[in-house]
Length: 155
Image (cartoon, rainbow, N blue to C red; front, side):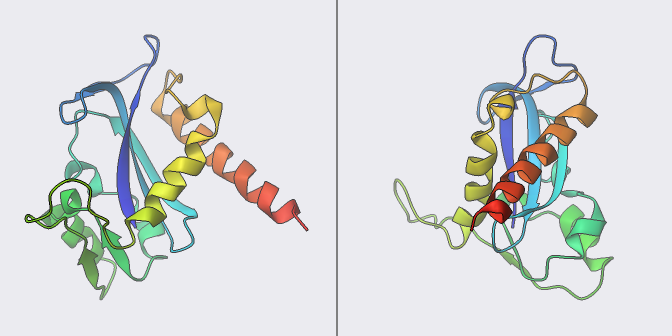
């Protein structure tokens, strides 16, 4: 599953942009999760890049994910070409119905949203306090590793 999340940055937060759709000045996190909501890939960049532009995630993690459910924003040629370069893949794009009014449940969307919820429990990730994008990526992975080790330690 692939999705993005816009996060506000602090004033000393280094490179940032403006996400006009969510009216947030900050950075955007694109994540790839597997079916159990575990983080497989991550890319962080300024928030002014659309989902189609951020779909060029590292192809290494993409090769680990077989069935891929994507939001409509990732339906561009860039993602299709990146996945085609990895081999024969079937892409399933989950779209919201045009006839739907108000809230509508999308198939398997909760998987990636649950990952964002788990990451949101880490106070350090509530806002992006980091001066560089590399350290922002590192803190997301640290938060996910902490969550996984806590789960492994449970009886």
